[in-house]
Length: 71
Image (cartoon, rainbow, N blue to C red):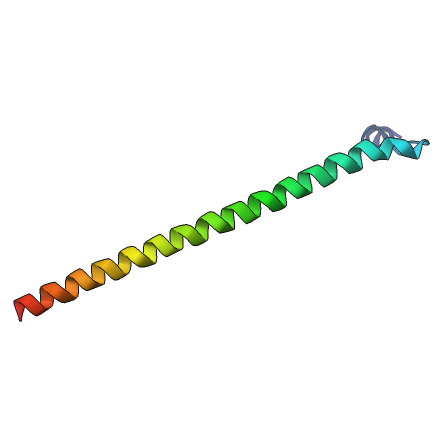
């Protein structure tokens, strides 16, 4: 009996199904925000990857030129 009472505190199914509309709207808003955030993070990550690759190439060129000078 006590277990049923505890579970009934968390489960609420309204008779009027229009009460689901605000929850659905908020769910859609958060899903869109999550997708946009993910796309933003991927975009920034690609940009940082390009910067890192450019820096690596520059360092490799400098090391190659220093090896030529030492030879």
